[in-house]
Amino acid sequence: MQRRVFAIAVLSAFALPVGAQERAPPERQTLLDLAYAIGESHALRQVCSGDDDQYWRDRMVRMTDTEASDEAFDGRLKQQFNAGFATRQTEFPSCSPASKRAEQAVARKGQALATRLSTVTRVVRDMGSDAKAVESDSAGPDSVAVTPAPR
Image (cartoon, one colour):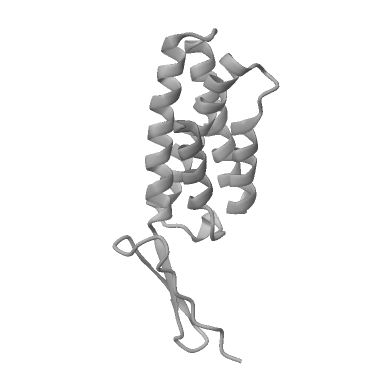
């Protein structure tokens, strides 16, 4: 159940594609932290489900595709995923109650990170030809407003 909630939170964080280069530095750091958590989740899930299980790796691919970030940041995201994977793979070489507890803890951490990303809203205001995006952490995730571009 915890994995399912984490997966839903991760996917909802990227429901509206926003290039990572458009994100503020704190959001970019949250993305890096999330990539690390997804890597951890991938290792912990594989230790019990086998190497063929690509559930979290597939979600990481979706995240990098959705973010469509610049090459350097994309590399950093992948590096964080791999670091999280390597850390947990070394720490838990076999499936055990401890690895399952670690998987649940990482799922909670990933869910919190994804929720943090999903609460940032962007409002585009019609300000002539120089429309600007305004971000707010106070609004809910469904309160994104976009005005049509002038014609």
